Length: 477
RNA sequence: UCCCUAGUAGCUCAGCUGGUUAGAGCACAUGACUGUUAAUCAUGGGGUCCCUGGUUCGAGCCCAGGCUGGGGAGCCA
View (spheres, rainbow, N blue to C red):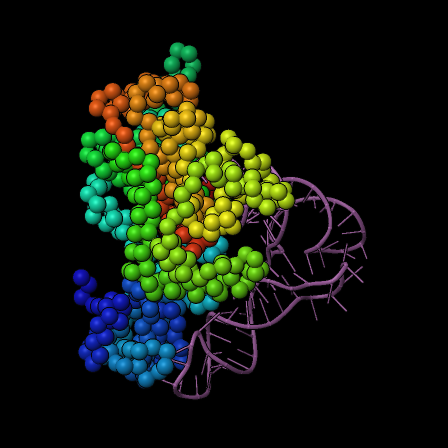
């Protein structure tokens, strides 16, 4: 514990009449008398009141927006209207100056795009303070949810020798001298001289490893960084993001849906219970930002109401085949408003998913039973022989937030799928072996952590919910 | 990667049909005021109009190419 109380503590305990020290950063200095200070412990700021007669002019000059100060004085009930308590300052120390001509964060509206370029300082703003406090609470909620249910936290490798994860383009990991690559007799690059004696990459998914662990420990989850070298330039994709992947032995696709729905609701409820003030701030922010937008682009429900709606309503559960029927029978389809064709066998396009979630059901939807051809090789083939026990959870505003499946546990069927998907057996021999030695039904899913944070905070761009976003052509900071 | 769109002061933006010395609010500096709430009032400083080239008597404005940001699509979480 720091020797001084945080601003959050001061507001919780309100030790009026006692001598306290506040340390934090100056937001504004009004009237040569009132310093608004934030220390990040809460969205709230505390007002430090000074009598300028009592302080050196040099000190007063250094009370600038962005400066770090330590103020000691008596905590009093505020005489002003804007706040309940304030510190009547007796001693003031400037811990770190901030040249106002250079400090870019002002007490005014900044665009998120501008703040993205100041990622090292944007933590100081209300918005990013709220977002990153929520990010913490959600991470904690995830661990608590799984821990309370007897799951074990599995650390899947970040550097992987497997190139069959099948989830996307990978980043190569090497310590070969790129200016002078070793070659074999055929003139090819000799990867046997690389650090691991073979080609290695950053992981695109911990799922296969999680399956190995689940078939021994029962219920496990991973929660770690994941990397995709795809040239995706959207507000929903990152090259480096954090993913949660539970995997449960003996669960089928229905258990998997129950787990995913419980999980999402738990995390959202946890945020509502533990970060209410931050959510209220973000809700206000969203309402104000919406005023600048055309009416049809505004949120139909305020943030907190949206979150409570998800917590209090059953997710809609439909099959892919039913989804296609709904789309085909929609007036939207009959008026030819979809850009992409709708027929059984297509991969659902963003516009289709959005229609189902935002127009038709207006709540989270779980779609199961996708055509085998458009889903990954490890998903369990259904009795009909053409669909798999896959599930996607779609939420309004974000689209797909969770993708999962019951895994193919039957050795022979999995071998066939490997052939059909051109996955060499010797690349995943270890994965196949779990189906030879005591295989069992099991299921799991993957959740993009940043997408959950987007949904809970209402932030529209994924670059604003991770401290230092990694996207194509951008790895600043 | 494809489509659309934007780039003017530190920030957010305006800038007419191509026409004289490029504007506002905020921020900043100086002063006044002193229980303020993004305080207020007065005065002041501050510009590679994204870059390169072109058209023109004349380009912030028109044209071409590029760079960067944003939105959408694809891929996906």
